[in-house]
Image 1 (cartoon, rainbow, N blue to C red):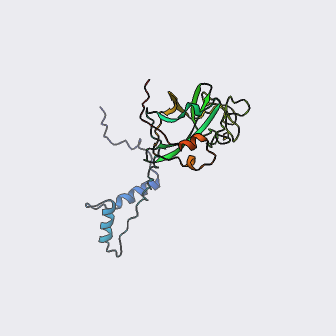
Image 2 (cartoon, protein in one colour):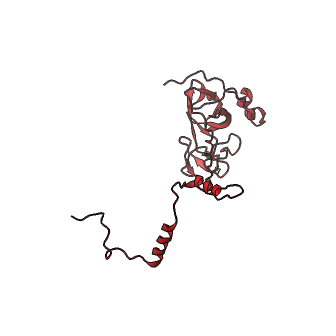
Image 3 (spheres, rainbow, N blue to C red):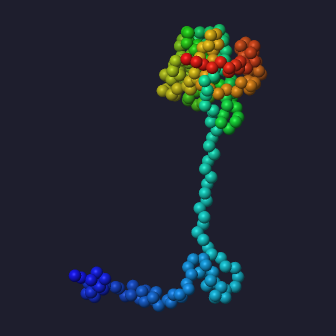
Length: 235
Ligand code: FES
């Protein structure tokens, strides 16, 4: 059996060039003290032993800057099952829609304006956030004019003319074709048109309705203040 630890025969050892041989000799010639200490402590010990004057500095690698995580942006609070009475059925004639400047709760404890429009097509009522998916601007091309004026069959954005299906909110013609308005759930409760699945601030006075001279009679009469959240929708 062969001895694995036996030195390699000289004739099989790789040849060592002259430079490597000299380097190996010079390294092995440096005496290593028995009490050698490495790192900062060793460097400082040698600094003191050599009788150096002044302040001892060790240059360390720069500490990487740790960026704090970006703050999580506030989000609207999830909706609930309550019915928010917005207006009466008779306030919305056929092929007509009007905007309601609501206030919605956010998870940072604040309330923020939230403009929703409710419309009627025949006997069907619908509601969408008043925000065009093209640029995010308001949809009504004049105050409470949401329908395409010639045929009154689709909703139309006043800015670049995108047209939307009233039932789905999907843009069927225009620069944001295929995108959709944000739908809000409507519930008809007897004569009331209500929104549900949202989280609204009932106490917020809607300033725009109070000061805008162009608001229609419903807004002026009611001061557009939400009436109740006490009724809970049941299937
Ligand atoms: S902003 Fe509505 S179509 Fe451009």
